[in-house]
Each structure stands twice: as structure tokens, then as C-alpha cells.
Length: 224
Image (cartoon, rainbow, N blue to C red; front, side):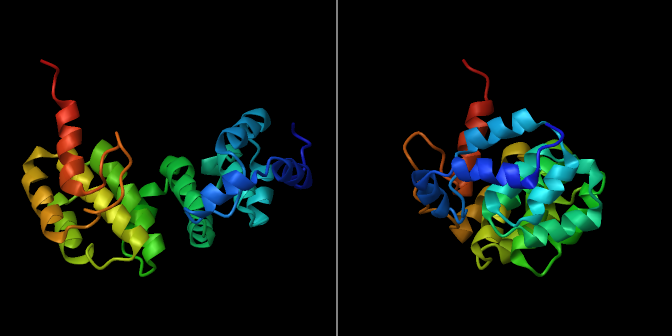
């Protein structure tokens, strides 16, 4: 597949366009109609192709960018390139995949996390919080969890939606993973009431932090 062109891939993605999938995706702010399972199948066939990934990203097309993130070589980008890509990633799914599939695997991830966490753009800052949440769960050493809770307590209530969601996830993760901070995390959630009334499907856990924390801690308990 080394000779596959951007035009050929765009044509293939256009053929996979499904109006029903587009309608569902657009409810979440994503302007494409390609089933993600089919998109992943295309990526599996293409395998890693950095040059093609860069070309697909450059089209600005959401489905093409999602595919680019699946076939790229994360370490081939510079930190500055990833910063520019994040600021240009307008579709939520592109934003999430860029952070989750590419930035997390990059040597500059910690530098980017710290810079984005302090950024004035709430969408960029949400990426910093997403990376911080990952550290809270996997590599908490060196993080000031009390300071993070201070920031969440004072800023989450009035934060824009995507930033608020990311901060809430971090709040819940602190409560789930760190028993010494659990009571405070729950208390902050109870006081702020963020996402308490979020519509949650049956058999799914509410994103309201006190409920989320309690449920995940319950699941961690050994079966009797």
C-alpha cells in the first residue's frame, strides 16, 4: 500500500459515507459520516504510513484526519507540530484521538501537558487536563493532587463545556485512584453539582463525580 495517494483514500472514505452515521456524529460535533469500525479497517489495511498521514491531515477533512491519526508514526512529529495540530483539531473526536493515540506516545508529552494545562484557550486546556488525568491514573508521582483539586474547586463550575468535562474526569480519577484524596474529591463534586443531571443511559455510570467515584471504587472491591 506504499503507493496509495491521498486522493485515493479520500475517494474510499467518500464511498463509506453513511448519512445515518453522519447524523449521529454531528450530534457530538463531528462532521463526518464514516463508521469508525470501517475507518479502523481501512487503517489496518494501510498500516503505518507517515507521509500519507501528513497528507491526509492536511486536507482538513475530519474522516481523513481520524484515519491519519491511526496510520501515523507519533514520534515522527515534533512537539511544535503536535501543538499546531491540536489547535487546528476542531472536531471533538479528532481532538480526542490526537491526544489519546499520538500525543500520549510522544517524548514531549509532559512538556505539552504542562503548557496546555495553562493555556488560555479552553479547548487546548482540556487536552492538558486529559493528559493530567492519564497521569493521575498511571504515573501520579510528582503531581500535586491537592493543587489540582484546588483548581478544580475554583474553576470547574464556570468552565466551558469541553474544559469542564475534562476537569470533571480528572476530579473523578483522583477520587477513584487516590483514597487519601477521595473524601475531598467527592465533597467538591457534591458542592459544585457539575453534570449531576447529565442524561445517562440505563446500565451506564453517571459522569457526576460522586456517583462515578463510588461506582468505580465499588467495582474495585474484591468479590465476597
